[in-house]
Image (tube, rainbow, N blue to C red; front, top):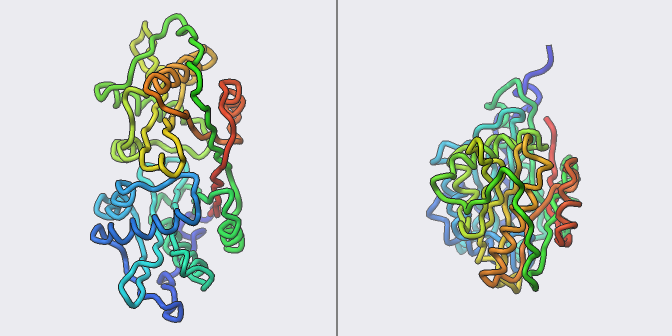
Length: 339
C-alpha cells in the first residue's frame, strides 16, 4: 500500500522559528499589522521591481486568512524599534481535488538581507507547509509551491538550494493599444455580453469546467473567486453565451490594477482569466472575446492590454496571443517540492 500524504510529508513536531541571532523578534501577524506589512511590501517592491505589485486589499486579505477558515499561518520579524523587517506566509487553498497544495511567500526588508533571514524563514515555511499537508486529504499527491520572479536570481538560487525545482513558467505579455483593434465577427450561434453580477456564478462554474484539464488548476470556490477578481472592471470583461442553450461558452475577465500603473509608467487592463469550454473550442470564441476586451480598453483610453500565459500550455495559448499582437515580457516561475 503506497504511503499516505501525512507519511510522505514527514511533518516535524514543531516548526523551526528563526534564531535570536538574526536580530529579530518573531510572532504571527494579524490584521492589526496591515500598515506595517504594507510598508514592508512597498520597501521590498521598490528594490525588487516585481512582475506583479501588491495592493493594500491584497495585504489585508492575506492577514485575514486564518479567520476565514483557510489553513494558513504567518510569521513576522520585528526589530528592536518594533519595525516589521521580515514576513513569511503559508496557506492552503480550499477545495483542491486532485492535488493537496500549500503555497509560501515571504518579504524581507532590503536593508536586512544577506544575514540568513531568507534561509531561516524558508525552513520555517517548509516545516509549516508539511504540517498543513499532513492535515489534508491523505490520498492526494502533495505540493509545496512558491512563485518567484524570473529576474530575482538570488531568490531562485535560495529555493533551488532548499530542494525546490522550477515546475512552470508564467510569462506576462503586453499589447500597446496605439490603434483601434481590427474588428472580428462573433461566431454564428454565440453572442458576446459584458460581464455582470447576475451572470458571475455561471461564469465561475464555467471557469472551473474550462480549466479542469489545465495543469495545476483546481476548482475555485465563491470566496476565492471574489478575492481573485477584486479589481475586476465590468466594462472590460466579456462573456460568450451559446444562443441555443443560454449557457456560458467562454469568458475574458479583465482587471483594473491601478495600484500598479505608476510603477509601470502606463495605464493597463490585465486580463486575469480567459477560458473557453471544451465543446466550444475551435469556434473562434476566444478571439472574439479578446478582441471585444481590446476594443473596450482602447475605447477607454487605456495604454496597454496585458495578460500572462503558461508557457507549457499544450493548447498553444502562447502562439494564439502572439498572433493577436501580444509581446512577451517578464515572467514568474513556479517552484515546487512534490510530496
